[in-house]
Length: 117
Length: 111
Image (cartoon, rainbow over all chains, first blue to last red; front, top):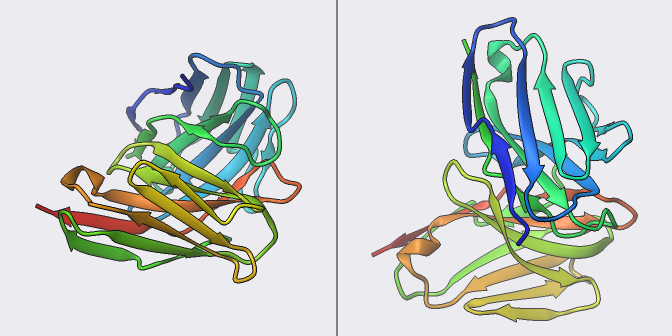
């Protein structure tokens, strides 16, 4: 159990367009989902934490109007990169936590590679 | 900023040898977790050790935690080519939902 999917796995878009990435927990209810960004050969950088039914908590330096997060149900969270630019090209990974408690194990999706031309 | 610092950044060993990776952190934690990432993929949870535990085993993995030194180590015994991946430690900060990831160790197992 504890499978998390992401869609799409890869996306190429033109500069100025918006891109939506979905993160789903397939076999469990995820009260908390996390969105990360990862540059090549670097660690994961937490962008935001989202709890179902409430607004996401963004990390310092992450623009909430640019990276829109919606956690509408216990199995789905979406990240929308608005007006994407080449510098937004990156690997975006989501994760989900079962319990929503304090620093529990996170189950990761396979990631979405975004390339903005 | 990332709390965890991992050492070494890269490690290359022969198949069958043991691999040891270290992780240091700065603040009080609830737990420390180790994850593995194959190139271009998501992370896979390996093991979680709580702040009141000192050592934990899972198959060929052995994790130690020294809260007085704020450090942890991951030992992979009898390494296999399939163990080639990046390994990250992640600390569960007291009072927070999120994990803070270290910079990772890139492990290469040579056949």
